Structures are given as C-alpha cells and as structure tokens.
Image 1 (tube, helix red, strand yellow):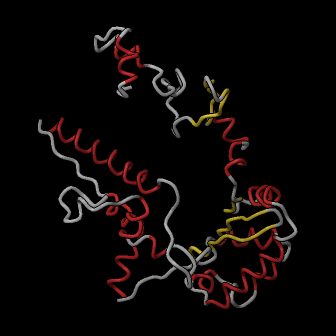
Image 2: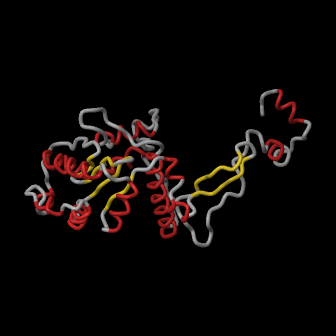
Image 3: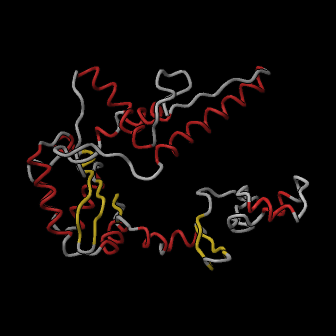
Length: 273
C-alpha cells in the first residue's frame, strides 16, 4: 500500500485506507458529509496498471542495459496521481479543492430521469447546443448565464442550480434508454447508470463476448467475465471451472508429491487435507 522504502511499509491497510491516505477520498462525496472511497478493488487495479507499466519499462531497460532492477509500487502513491492537478493547484492558490458531490465538474454531473440516473457532460459547445436542441428549448441557451462558452466555464453555484433544475425537470419525463438514444443521435456525452444485473444484459457486452458460460459441478451453468481486453490471435477462454475444495488432492499429492492413495484418508483424519 505505501511502498517498499516507506516508513509505513508495514502498516495494515486495504484499498479504502489507500484511498484515504492518497487524498482522493477528500474529493469524493457530498461537501457536508464524510469523504468517500471508490468501491471494490479499484485501488488494486490502478496500482496493478502502474505496476504493469513499470515492469514493462524495467524489461525494456534490461534489454538495453543488461541489468535488472527492483520495481517498487505504492498503491496510495499511484492513487494520489489521479488528482495530480489538484496538488499543483493547491501550491499555486494555497487552497484545496473540496468535494462536489455528484457534480464532478461544471456541467458534468449525475441527474435523475424517470427510471434511474444519467450522467450528463456538456462541457463542450457542441454538446451544450445538442442538449438544448434535444430538450426542444434552444432559447434556454441564450440566457445570460449560459450564452457563451466563457460564461459557462466558471459558473457560480446559482447558475449550476439553475442548469440542474432546468434539465432535471425535462429528464423526468424520459427513461434512461430514451435519453441515451437521443443523446447518441446528437453526439452528446451522456450515459445511463446501470445496476449489476442490467450490465449482464447489455447488448454491447454480449456482442464483444465479455462474458462466457462455464459449467460448475455444483452451481450449474454460470456466466463468468473474461479479461477486459481482446487478443486477436490468442483469445482468452476458460478451459475448466474453478476447482472444488480438495478436488485435486489425489492428483497433486499422489501424482506430484509421491504419496500413495492409502495415505489420503490418514491425512484427512489428521486435518492435513
């Protein structure tokens, strides 16, 4: 979590403590509530990506220098670079950016619709114009607060609230998929928020072969995710399901370690296997 040569190298940690230590959590969540961390194992994934890039660099260096080296990755340090601009900004301004809730940036936020939520990003002029046209009210874009890209670049809180109320009221009459299709037709940067069961049913993932079905001895046929990348010559595949507890005891102990089959009941009674 904290690096090989860190004074905190032996400190107990998990992804949530890495997020807290990195400063990222202080940018996530509602301003008047506690900081948040990204869910699941995002910290490990981001640290792993950094580790993969560093390892490739070390391999390329070895080819050139004929010398290996130790690759050291700090999960928290890697996460702190996610908001590297905030570090620079704090030095220039002497302040720290706070949490903005579901408004990540100006006109970049989550909004409700009839059956869920959409993320709306209209930071570019053509996205903004497309959204105004999609709502059927292009004249709204001519309000003084929104009339020019310069005016929209640094909106105050009241302007942000006006935008949210305006778009929120319109979106309440539409479903996520309706909004998604309309935004795609106009080249607007919008996307629906999906639940995990909904992700399993997405047509785009089915076409890309994101999931495959694997037969498990006890669970039956289960959909499993494949790696999130495609290799044209060596596509990934499952050759067998995950093993059951002790499924390969005989294969490993007798086939590889030289035990007899008669030894297995004894090892089992002793609690070894």
